[in-house]
Amino acid sequence: MTHIALFHSVYGLRPAVVTAADRLRAAGHEVSTPDLYAGPVARSIDEGFALSDRIGWAAIMRRARDAVRDLPADTVLAGLSMGAVVAGELLAERRDAAGLLLLHGTGGDPHTVRSGLPVQVHVGQADAMFPPTEVAAWRSAMTAAGASVDLFSYPAVAHFFTDPGAPEYDAAAAELAWDRSLRFLGTL
Image 1 (cartoon, rainbow, N blue to C red):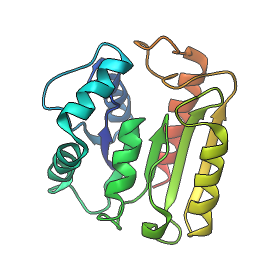
Image 2: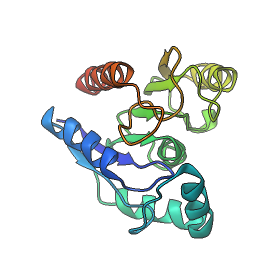
Image 3: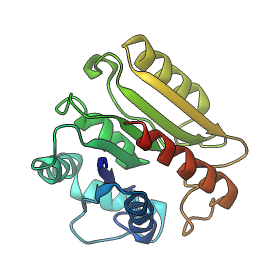
């Protein structure tokens, strides 16, 4: 069993995050889903960015730190889009994390990565928020810093391809991403 902290996207803690956590729990993992917005959920990505801006990055990160404070040191940090950035930023303070699982984005400063850190990333090739060139540069920097990065890029899919409530949902790509994620978590 692996402990996982799964951080939500800019939309907030919506049903897709709860469903993802339930999928991980069904595989035998213990999963926390911190609510970084303390209640509100956005209906659109623009509303999500406005909500995130109103709450502020400092408050979001304070809530994330509070949420993981009592979790085991080797908790896997995982995130969806904005949550990937949150998970990556927490890595600097949680160097014993068993791994980093990022969907729909990247996160983590190469200067804070320990050698051998297992990282798995799932992004769409048509993702305008995390374009392939930026993802490739991030991967190169993380690998150069010693992380063991597995990057899965899904052809012809956009940003939130695993979220059934998002317009860019792709059922086949989502199933493959979750299967790969579960295999990754099973190795930690």
